[in-house]
Image (cartoon, rainbow, N blue to C red):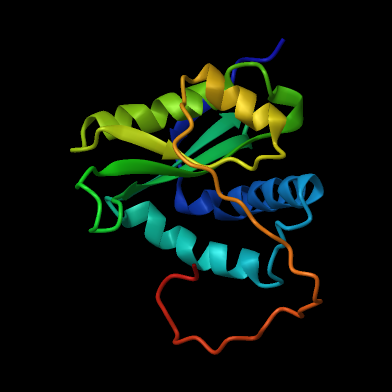
Length: 176
């Protein structure tokens, strides 16, 4: 039996391996719900932003590494609600992914613990997480982490067919 994966902060040289895992996460989400479409340049934009997340003190990327290969990752950032709500800074967990063969073995929990440890040093009161409604395994995982529902995002499909619009954007430092 191999050793459990080590949890550590991501390094610049992890970029491509994490990007590959990130695409697997997106593919799994798209398979669960076709409304979760992935832009053709999503990986390019994600890889562009990755380098900023590594040096931004308001962001963290942690990885799970086993025998030289990355088998999971988590991304998180400092987040605050719109100014019309009471100020309550949070750490938002953007993405969590563990390769299928290691799920249920505590890797995801340990990645969440790394984010919690980082958040303990910040002026935040809680973690915020989003999970696809169709992701029953993901929802069960977050329930085991004592996550409580806060709101639901709902969609209504319109009867007309609409092609995705190409919107001109100003060139930004971050892709998202």
